[in-house]
Image (cartoon, rainbow, N blue to C red):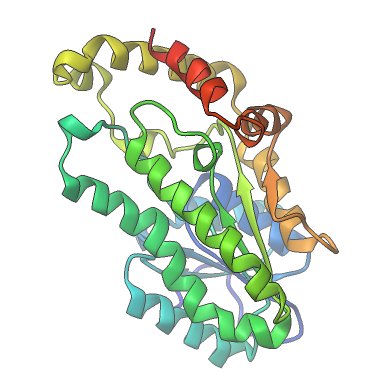
Length: 291
């Protein structure tokens, strides 16, 4: 299952072991390098092996070693096999960081339910596949289960219904699981980034003009949303390395919080929802995003 790479070495068992998903770019890549720099034996997984070059180069530049392996998180059998292989190679598993995810832009009238199901498969069920396979081993090591969510897992955002639904589901699942897992020694956390300057947005494969042209009655509001979001990513996005520091905090802090935001902006934004009993503050805010 391992991919040959200059940054890989033979398995060892003397360091704590973490599995990280979605490491081909962005936060996942930065988190993998940061974890290795912190002394963790890092199993960095990605869906497409042909996209591992940037990860390998980052590891070489940082002077760290990564164990790079293929994993499509939507494949439950593959997730189980990945965990089994890690245990066979290292004898233990101390943490999982569920970072893999896929963006999606759309609204209910203009997309199929199959589109929504696909978003859920990656962003929600993909998290469950690896988490379920890992939990027996995390119990054995009193380990950590960390999931990269989003501020969109707290506040629903226009034209992000499916994506936010998946992230809401992740947050609800992990918040419910946390006390159950804690009773057996496993720490559960979610990390909530705001805008991060990564390939994540580009990976939506969005042609703005085409999307607006196809939006019908939703065209004016979609255009307003896209203009607002483009400005936010241009002017206020964190770097992947900045956001990954919070992931590392969840991995290494003595007693990490359940919910960690990656920036002051993300903390202020999510706080609106967490004190918004009747929902008016959130809808009053997001309504301005679409004119």
